[in-house]
Length: 159
Image 1 (cartoon, rainbow, N blue to C red):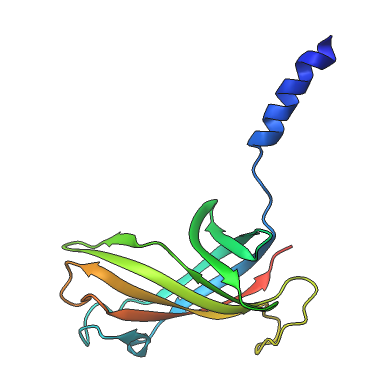
Image 2 (cartoon, rainbow, N blue to C red):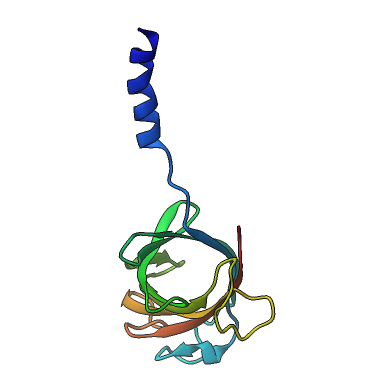
């Protein structure tokens, strides 16, 4: 009798559990030079980016995936082949002191897991790519619509 009552609870717990990522990489996202900008007001709004994130990939059967940071999906994409992936974010808003800017991110990368086998350029890297952040709406004169920032993303597989 107790087992009959326990089964629905166990089924509910299994349904509510958080899925494990298919793969994960510890990445560094860097943009440090004015040359990383295109179509922006020159000499304005060039701030350095040097951040680290854990990119978690949740891949489905059709080779479509979500990339998550801290449990939140920030982009969706697909594998082009066994090593190359492309992804895109929804628009996201950045608030500055006197303006708001909406960006959209597109990215491409060569990424490998623990088995390796992908053509990596750097020693010890498992993720090599670029992300382009494009302004889609802006109140900031230095960051007009169409302004782009290129970010370099490199990282290592995180088992």
